[in-house]
Length: 298
Length: 225
Image (cartoon, rainbow over all chains, first blue to last red; front, side, top):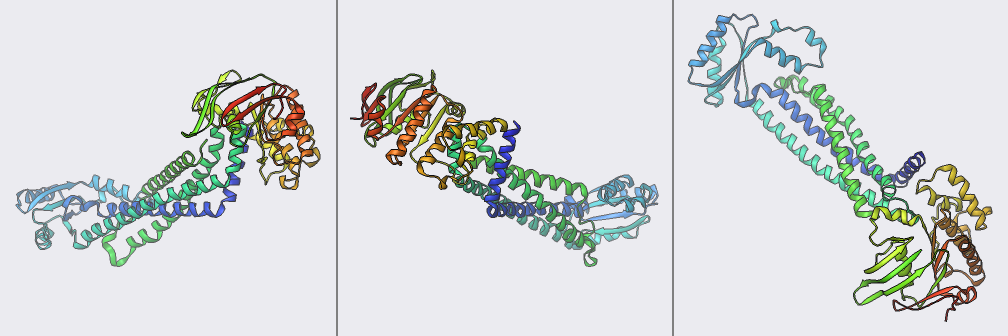
């Protein structure tokens, strides 16, 4: 068993060494395609985080003061119920706000230390009957002067545009990434077919002296898997760079105050990384299986 | 050891390579297959280690029907059958010793077995001195000895030889035949396809003659004719 394993690993190493340029190309294609795919997921995640409170046609939010009295909250509620211009609304409690906040800034312990449930403003999220910008603003501003109200925040055109554009950006990167992943599978397949044909004499001898079919196949399969997995591992630092320099810089830009919250939490980043590794491994496995069953006639 | 029952092989419908062949070869026999090029000698040999399957008929090796053998069992059949060829088929970047060791490595033999068996078999074929040479530094006869060492290192029951002296001068060929004769005398069944009239006539072993895919003669102690 040990003898077999050692022999198989040596064979794999030799294959890669002889085929180094092509193997590197294959690894890089896998890395770039997986990084693009991962980036599309990062953008989608960040957009969702930044615009969470604006989902489902919510056009403005009435934030109450943290110390607003129950009677003041009730007064707003009565107003909302009675208004024909309000299509739908929902109330977000201090606790829910705190929950959202802690989830969102889970990786910022310093910030979390400074807040508590008590300091959170409860809010009303409102979907007006008429989504026209002018009408929304007229309706929203009627709440601004009410007792207990801290501020009214509108989903402006800018937010809508971000949602739309980010969706496009994420779709384009996703599409490109997916195409490149297919390309990556084909490159792995081709690399293996070349590795196989450059060793056809050895393979012929192996068959002749009775090497088992798996013994012949396994070095090539390991070779293909390594290409996909190393590609995925190279994609991760690229993704980390994209997260730090593109997405987080965006959210800190002074001109884009509305992009506050345009970021990706550590948990989400880890999840996306795992998906990238899983896809890299899956693509390499499929490429390897197709290659050995097509080009290795054992 | 080997039995062919009504074996026919067609690569294309109009030119069959083997037609209704019947033969039985006992353990320890030495058999020459003779006949013109294209008469079916190579097909006969390729049927015995399942490189080909017959179109119809049955092939038994060591008592087992190998036609219906599932493909994952074929390697285990081949571990009992050594093969040598006119063109030696050595790996050019491996030394003599490595070429022989390769045959053991790929069937998962442990290192200590390889280290013991390779020098022993190289000694048997008379190449101990050249074990660290590369194949292209050897003469044709020496290369064929390496390929015989590789085929025999696993002590197979059967040795198949397809024109093993085809590229060698008569004197060298005689040396190779002595080696094959010696291997045969250890109890290994040898089936050898050849064009070499001199060798067949000198050795006086069983001769199976093929012509246009048919066995036209099966004679013990025969001559080439």
